[in-house]
Length: 123
Ligand SMILES: [Zn+2]
Image (cartoon, rainbow, N blue to C red; front, side, top):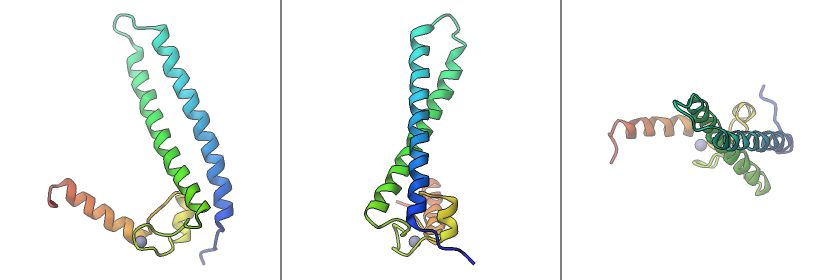
């Protein structure tokens, strides 16, 4: 059934993704920089674009954090283990989500708990 994938193959994919993200962040940052220099004219139509760019930048940085965390876990030999219960994360799940840090069971529990927290049912 589920084929075992070695952390090494994940490492090279994560490294490739990190390189892409760094490039993307660089590009988005320079986009923001040129925008500020260029125009703050009346009714600035670029404001919407800038906000979009900033949102992309935030997303890319969050992805980068997750990818770097996964790479650190590989270094430590902890990659692919659930942070919450310590059991190996399902290989299919890791395959789909390289930087997963929780197994499916814990993930759904955490989601349930945080949904309850959002509804104010937890202290
Ligand atoms: Zn778990």
